[in-house]
Image (tube, rainbow, N blue to C red):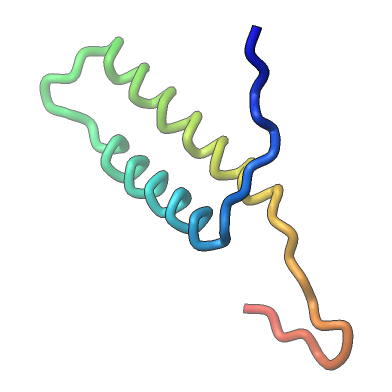
Length: 75
């Protein structure tokens, strides 16, 4: 059985592009179609929910740095 690669080499720009693409997909999939069935709506909402969850997990894996000296000004 093949194994998954657990070492990814993505740059900050790559991650930013992935996150922006996911946000765009969420925005496009969030709109209900007029002739959408109940099953299609449930599937669409589940897909959007999974994308939001993935974005959250990506955010949680980021390491945010603070300067060792001086005053930190967040924003």
